[in-house]
Length: 475
Image 1: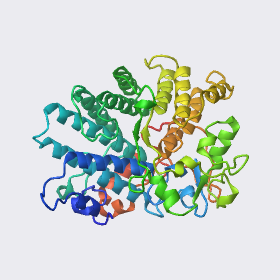
Image 2: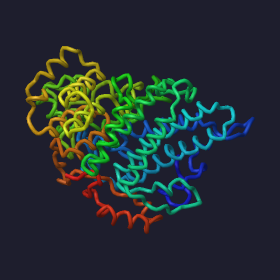
Image 3: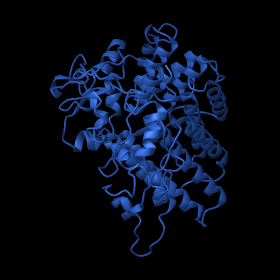
Image 4: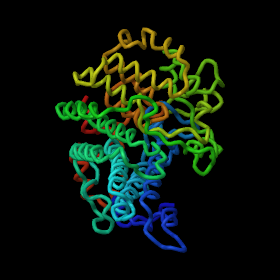
């Protein structure tokens, strides 16, 4: 249980005693010592996957905000009452405490580890940096300006300033570059690398892809920088197949199961069904992924009314695969990068091939990931409303619709697609008609404990409201 955080909850001034489980990890009854970097890295990475993959309404409602799922008994979250359960507070606490603080301590631990060879140390530090960059970008893309340069300092600074979001992005780009150039393919990283099994070439592809994603977020905010960094990342070598995906293999047991298993199975609840917004789009395209994304309890597929009370038995249920313990966690994949390549090509960036080919690769990668047969993929891509040459709308609308569908089970990225491209069209929740949020508001606890800095940040971004657009959301 996370119960005590010294100073500001968001200060992001974290002490090890704030986490009972984490504290227990530190205890060796025979040989008290510092926690090895590998343990801290493992905990930080798994915590990141767990948080981004969860669907608990107390900590992660991104599948709901993206209108891919909707609720049954409760409707506060699909009507964007994010403060009712303190969702921003919980999310920030997990990201700063369980993820970023552990990764920070992992770096400190490995830098003092005399048993490591220099190349091993550099590889491990670079691996940690890439996960840190992912976490930082997610926080900025959720809130805007955030504590960064003064964060994670413990009692040394319990009221950290908020850094400008674009400035953070630029620093993250620099960090990725340093990490990429630090990798040594002739040496290993962490012995227990459960992501890429010490395949440094895949870690380098992750670095390139992280840089490319950061760059493409800047396409409307700073086109020159976006083009420069995106083209640089492309020359490094991006993810080239689903074998390069940034995924976590959860285990077929309750201890290390995908967090959805706890939310959907162990909870004993029936809180979610696919949303009509999502189901209707896929029905209109006769999308073969429906056989995986949805259960066959209803024929035809019927989505729950978004933002309204829904009787569970009246609507199509979530597909069986999402109830399994060993469902993979996914934070970045080839499909996502391919859609961004299509975007880059349409903007005139030097990223090879054509927008149509990148788009086709993206759709294909998504379908292959979910086990759709090749013949069904070919039939789908030949549809006039799917084929890049004939699908309706602008290039942004074409890319966005398929991108949003492909980010199923990655709610945060699906929502980010909508924010970046203003497509596809999302509805208003039935109960309130509240507009879809452009961001989350800052945690209430932070307002109480770091109010002056939060007020300055809120003013700088244009107000702490759900409708305030992020710096990269220009249109």
